[in-house]
Length: 390
Ligand SMILES: [Zn+2]
Image 1: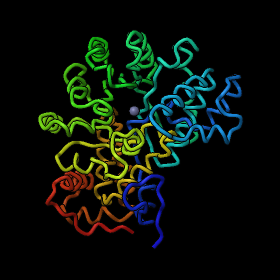
Image 2: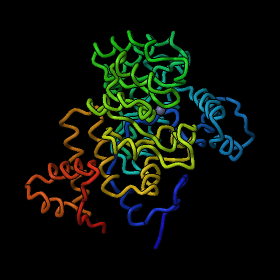
Image 3: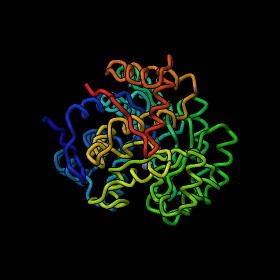
Image 4: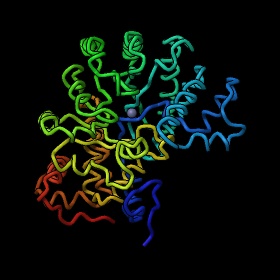
């Protein structure tokens, strides 16, 4: 049987080719990916050359080697160098356009991407950066049919810039390119409570709010994100499993968790020789979504994240459920979500799954039946029958 080799796997390293093809073809969305961290080594190299920025490498080949993940400190260094290479409006537009090209190659129809303006203050005006992001988004959508909206991230290590970041986000909201505010960067030493007022202002002014939490810091960070920031989604959140009352709270609220397995393996949040705790998270009833975080820096992409879980024993139904969860967790208005639901449904019809769902549920609303079966797959004793993988 043909099999697909995946970039990183701690279990079998191989996935059945039929399932791999289906995961590639499956229409998807992604809600936790950083624009800066999604820009590949070659593009950064081109920017460095155009902007006369010297890299710690004598050639593109050397730079590509340098760009590969080694350890946490090296990752931080690569991220900082890459961000410094992004200088001109053309750079920001190009990054966004290429981002959409990469997303469309994986059949990702829509993304909510983080952007960290604190890394770029002083290079251009807010207006210039936002206009460049808009140009890149419009060009990329026209060329590749994939869309992006941005969540502007406060870099925790620069708490004194949080008001400026909020102003940037609000300007972006006016232009229709920014939908939310987040916090990212080093979690340890920078608790969510430091950003409470800024988040309150953001919510009042109509921004959606999310927070990286429970990745390198434990339960207190997630409690802070929920209670102080009123975060609507949690970036990563895997360490919630350390606190039963926190798990109960997140389950009750059905707060989406933006899980990114390869990022967790690379950064040592999860040990490489262990299955990812997303299995446990799903089993206890947490609402998990699947994402790639900083894909080229972790030698991954969203497709590879699905393959990783497939290699760890996730069934097609479970992976489809994660895909559905991610769509439902977007901040899209209901009318736009329903357009994507129709596309998702068309994909299932083309793969011959819908008839099974219809006959199982005797309904004339395939989507509702799909939701029902999808929901049921979360219950441990439920068994999905006769879904035909062509
Ligand atoms: Zn992230």
